[in-house]
Image (tube, rainbow, N blue to C red; front, side, top):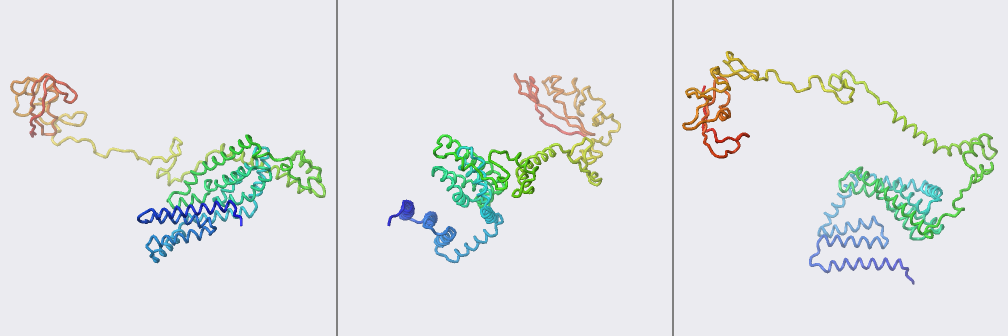
Length: 458
């Protein structure tokens, strides 16, 4: 018996996978869970290539290698199986997967994809590589209804592959257009793969859809552009359609009225409606055909009217109840649409927060800032600084240490702080002259001083 090349390729590939797994296990001193996981993946690939159902293969391999990883503990293995099944069934996000598959099944059984492919094929008859372009566009549309790769590739392989081979397309171009278009099903939303990833990784599925939408459309556009350029450069790989394949047979009622492919559809139907038709083409049939012909223009006109009305519509001004206005929710007098400030919402000074005069200072004239001089301040010098009790008054208002003469500017700078109430502070300063003095409060002097001691007198 002669074995086909495809079978030889599959058997050789499975043998290499099994040999690599066995060699990995024999080359290590201790088998860990990582080695068991790699062995499981290799056996899953081999079992699927042998033709076992994917669902039962994954379930059986998972249970078997979980039992091996748990050191042959059957109870823990079965408990994990039940918990995993309950977690999957309790996930609300995964409910969308069977619903997407069901939607794709309805689209396929309603024969909508075949009609869409035929319509795109005829509308793109003058585009180079029209069949491959129609295949890619149909795959992109069908991908939004299924969200998986297998359904798109299988259905388009049954619809588009025979048509492309009959039209003289090369096998690589035909197969490549179908497989490339089918892979868009995992990228263009809604995608089953993005749902599974979002549920597993805890990421928002809506954000994944938003991130994958434009890359999917861009990839579909690049596929179409590549096919058109390839058909231009190598017409033998994607030959143009013949005249017979571009022709669509006219309905018999219209042929009975004398319709041909050279006639314009709109003028012919308008004339037929005015004349009333004949026995095969009733006036109702002609009006229905005219409506179908004008339907795109009607939709375009309605869309333009709606867009114009939305752009020129006056914004609606809602009346705010009096109760809400009292709470500060009414519109401001400037016409702004934001919430108005409630009355008196600004920052106000608390009552009596100003600086009050100390007791016993009524006989002293208070300055504008509200601070009064302590008793006995009338004998102060012109700069507002007085000597402490018992200190000999100097010409400048401050006494110098023995042997030291203080400049007038130093006296102003080293004056004691203002007295508050009936108490004042007396400060003793130590000063000495040096060649270059460091900056003290932003002012340089020929001598440096610092306070040595201070005391309060009342």
